Image (cartoon, rainbow, N blue to C red; front, side):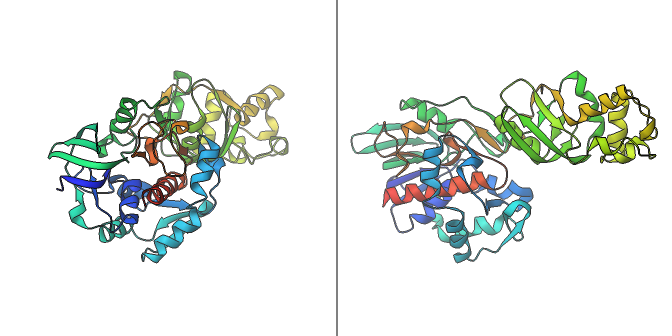
Length: 379
């Protein structure tokens, strides 16, 4: 491992690897405490990694909209797709314009490992401290001291602690006077209160829903789980939920008024899987009988499925979260270079910043875009 470098990158995840390959030819060193690079990339998207989305706008992100726009526009999804294809990566498109690796996320990681000299990456290396020195920084690691003129924090967030996620980036930011907004698990399932424990009995069932949280409405799939509810719509809803109630339309495509004369049993016309429909009817204390036989009062209870309101007990936590909400406040970062406005030659990238994207490839797009901007700032 080098003991003195121009640019030290801490973190070999999406943003750190992208920065390293873009700085090819420069005097760099990448440190990571894991035994392999791109640990989170390898497991994301069911092992195929949702690299980006064909439709990326600032509305897909939480955070300072102007800052995010300024970064994304310099290296947007089209630039990323062109860059990846130029490096031989084949991508496939799934619903909602989501781009995935064709066979496995290893294909993406291989792009980086082939493009970065392996001698410039030190794995199984724990960074213990970062100190300012007269000519840059001194970084204490489990393998000794490293002197660097510039340091880039690309350590990610707190999600997936089983993959080595930690709070190092936030700790360093605070040490150097940066404000870190409240951190919480994002893109994560909800646990439920006792009144909703019946959800757990539906574990494995999936339905399309409409979820309203605060002033945000999300449409998509909801998956009932042993802990509560998850699925794409729920994960996105978790970004906008702090505490309090959410509202779910369990039958968003069903017009209840058209069902009232049906001779079919109500469980068959609600537009829900039989098991789900019968469970809800049981909770509503409605007999599964011909729809036309339901009373006005019973129809009133059925209507609650269009606007079922409850307060989640909490979330599944960081171990099940895709990302971390919150991070280093963007007001203290230069959007043209990703450099700290408080400490010269200290940079922050990716998830450690106060930017969180919705489900669908937006967070990796942010990681790659912020790395590109940083690379240009380091030229």
